Length: 265
Image (cartoon, rainbow, N blue to C red; front, side, top):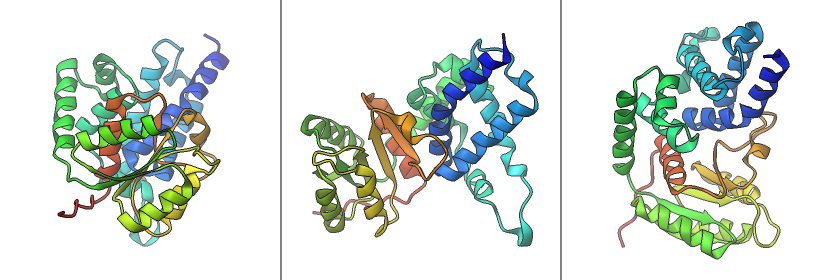
């Protein structure tokens, strides 16, 4: 197989590897740095990806090898931890990794097992453990930013089925900013393009200026926000979305934050 064909195939998979890495690390910069390290390994020795057969599985398997070795990175002067080291020190158990591979990235259990170096039954058990932990997460207030009423209600139903409380559905940036200020959500789910031509990304930036809360973006074009070349979202859900993908992404976003409990009525 020509090296160019392998290179092109790897490049095609990079946006999705970045999506997974960012969700796993809970941070764009840390996730993108791990992906960059994976590319450096491939450039140094192209034989680690010999051909395009099962390339996606091989690429994610290589990612996990690099990810697991990231904790051995040299510490900078004065023993200050790098952001990658901090994230690795908070390394999610393999149950969360398995669930992200299956629910977010669409791997089969058998493929996820290869990526993680486990057998099928062990991987299935890991996914079950992660789902149990997800169901036990503390409830939080959630703001939905979505200009399509039916989709907004669909997202709200998913959120509430997880035990969280939807405090509002905003169709524009102005509505989102007002609701965020009033309701103080612990999580935001935001579409990218809104009804009046305003941007869900701009709304999110405004909300983040006043509160440090996780934001999950929902878009039909995730690859446009997964270039690794500028500040980009950490959590992305692709439209049309699967219910399980939304749930798992919400759970992972909340994993790195202390959820705000729902106030008593």
